Image (cartoon, rainbow, N blue to C red):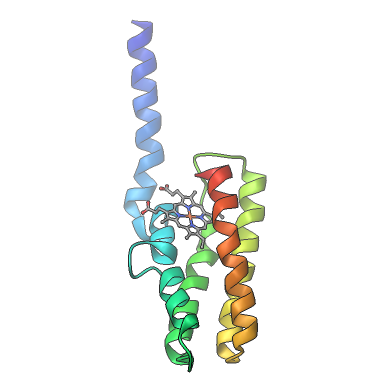
Length: 133
Ligand code: HEC
């Protein structure tokens, strides 16, 4: 009986934690991560190609960096299932700052600044995944 009650409680908790995510899937962590780095169309991958191409197409780069920074801007409002919230807040802030730096570099068409900011973004993936994924 006790086990049944415990199971129902866990099921209830799961539903509560899943519902807001399904209501707004684009803005949960998984949805934002897909925008940032998912599949072929994820901003991080697209930018890697764009920044490696000589004669930078700044219009295309800007479109991606804008999408990128919008998504990282929303990440801080989410709560990860794993890891503590202080760490999450800090990592989200740093991630967002680097994405904004990249977006600003694209606006200024500053390739060196763009490469630096992109490098910071690339280094942040593993750190955060290790702690919170
Ligand atoms: C601030 C923390 C953080 C940073 C930085 C971060 N990620 Fe993530 N990422 C996560 C978390 C948490 C998940 C798990 C999301 C889930 O499935 O609920 C995730 C999931 C993913 C996924 C799987 C998405 C899916 O389809 O389920 C990919 C791909 C990914 N991240 C790529 C990257 C790449 C590439 C970078 C660096 C450019 C990066 N992430 C940076 C936190 C982060």
